[in-house]
Image (cartoon, rainbow, N blue to C red; front, side, top):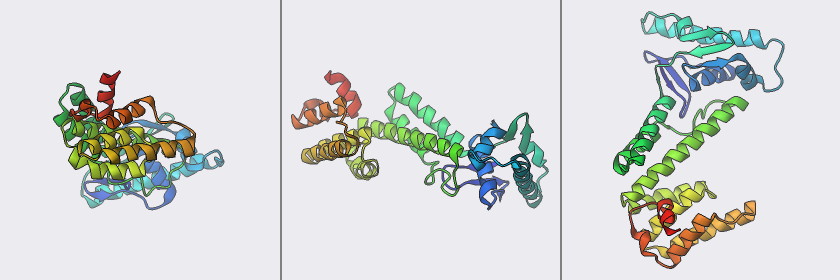
Length: 269
């Protein structure tokens, strides 16, 4: 089975789709897919489907959705002329259900990202940047973009979006360490525009602009972030970002080194 959640929800057996069109069965499949090869408790499925207003018929209704999904799995086996038991793919377990995954994009993302973090810790920034790129390539847009997420899936979406942003931040960090600032300015400008109060991305953009000989633009990026933080949250930028601004204003020679803003600030003291 191939399962994709990092974009539109898709699940296929031998190339045949088993993704339902109805909203609630899609939610059930999405919950099982995000936690492929793990037992998803019935209580979690209830909360996702109905929130706090769980009907008396919830158990029977959930069983109907599972029966429908198994029907799609069985039809896919038949269409692909593959022997298989739907109950061995979508298993009933004590207290919940388990979907046996084959290739699951979120698990592949996690695996590549972990390899990237390990390479970065070893100082192999070139390999780390490549692995982070490979991890990010599994995203085909917003995760589960075509599923009407309830409270449980919202938590998963927040986790996935945070993981994606973290890997992106680390990939840019590696690219800056490799001296790729000219290539990064356009990408970082767009990212900062979409994440107006993300200090890490702002620091990366400031460093990239400075190294491209655009010191005034780097200072302006800091000014806009500070304005956003003060006006919307009543907060000042972090001390680390403020120190980076001072380094840029004084044209500190350490900013020319192929290292990210965070690493530079650690050496400033």
